[in-house]
Length: 250
Image (cartoon, rainbow, N blue to C red; front, top):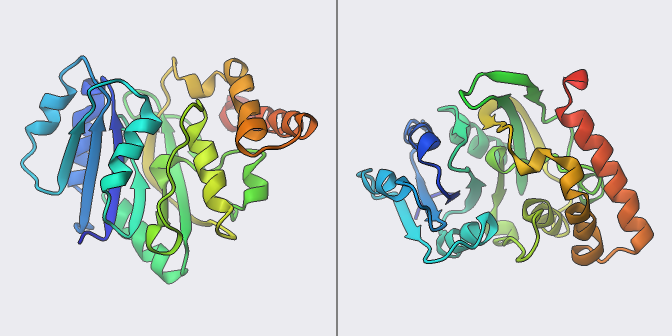
């Protein structure tokens, strides 16, 4: 049984996919399985994945486009590893990522951990300052800003169970992390930069004004907060999001 399960949704990612694949194959830590769900791509992503001759890679091809959260859930259902981690099909890990994260989880007896990551342009060149894992994460402080990024986080499914992504939310990663942190007291920071996140100019996640309503629904529909409490946390999230990505603060 593999010690780590890597979960990846893939949708029309052929332009970046080979770099992402190589970053996984280059990992110093070898005891992993990689569950990739292609979300009905129309490019040649599936062909690229199928060319890899590695039995640790398990490909699922979805007959319909259900979104990244749904694709991750399909992979999570098949995951058998103790430690769950995520890597989107256009992101990148340094060779020491899995080794350092697993070692840190065991040393700190952590149920959830996250690391720094570099924020890069589409060519993986630095764009703004690295995101820093500078504090312990709790349910309460994650309400105001989502410090946990999928590509630089890991949790122990043996201790906390698998946490699936909610259907219907465009902020499914934030909801998933909040639900996970309802079950554990704290996520611990590993202050090393071992991953690279591509900041696409068209990225929905960075257009804060376009997803204010979606973020509000995280609190109102998924956390079941009152209207006033939901708007309070939405306002905090918006301010923190501006500071997180603005070059003024980076």
